[in-house]
Length: 218
Image (cartoon, rainbow, N blue to C red):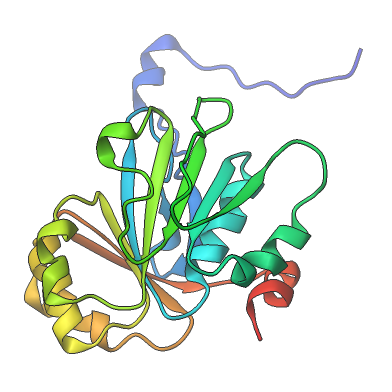
């Protein structure tokens, strides 16, 4: 029998014990307060707006695959996702890339959540009323326009890289952010990502693995 070290304590002392668990979710980056973690999948449908002219949405999709999700992409540019398709292991259908206008039939579960990435112009690949449990919808945009303000309020999260002042103001109003915090959205250096929820804003430095650098750094 292997010997196991033990520590005895009285039942009265248990109330003073605390246990801190790391945050659960998808790690996007790291900051002064620790890891920048997004709870990407929940029992209820989640809708996210990703604003980036780079490949941030593809990075999120890649990391979602790594945690066991099925990813469906609907896009105006199927070829742009070719490198990611080639990196996904053969076997079960982990990643499906569809052209604009295709119907999304994927569903999610606790064991295998579903991520739908909409990289089309109309952002209607999966309307809210068609979303199921354990399914997250990501709308990808290069920028925010005035016409996006009302739609921003329908999202649970905003994930972005540096924004122009007008776009940062739209994000501030859409998510109820403090003006001094929202101004940082216009000052983020390359490689920094912001995550906004209702009244909350966090920042983190993207940290890419060797494989991710190969896939997403030109």
